[in-house]
Length: 218
Image 1 (tube, helix red, strand yellow):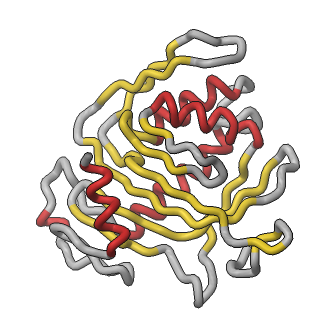
Image 2 (tube, one colour):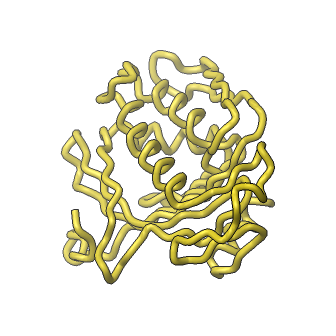
Image 3 (tube, one colour):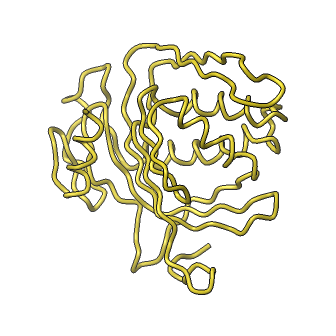
């Protein structure tokens, strides 16, 4: 329930305790946050999204993680990036995924394309990234990104919204491999204290004849 509550307030542009404004400024002081719930800000959010974008390729069959089996790579990627009860509203699928196992299922398909990510700064008109909610131990950041694919799938340009939460203590996330040579095996990932995705929402940009409108700078 917590992540739905926070996301609703992010969409409305309201602010919670220690919140910053939507023009990327934070009024909260790091001193107001407890040690186990650091303050979220634009720099942290951008770094986390870039790390996520690097990892969708790193854990793909084309990446340097060494997982030629996409089902294994997707399990480790999901465990490294998402809270166990995270929510994924994906870019090109009508299905909402809730929890590690369902999110893993989505990424077995996405990582198979060899996605190469670019965090798009947009144009003066589109702007971004935007901090719409930021406090102690959580934050929401929105902007634009692009993907090219090594399997020659058409490029994708999309808007994104990520809600991150700070995990104050370690936890284990277990994912069952659903297909491939390791089907039935259980991958357990140890999540150390740090920032993880609690909710992700992406939406493809409007297009004309299948080509994204020239709204952003590649």
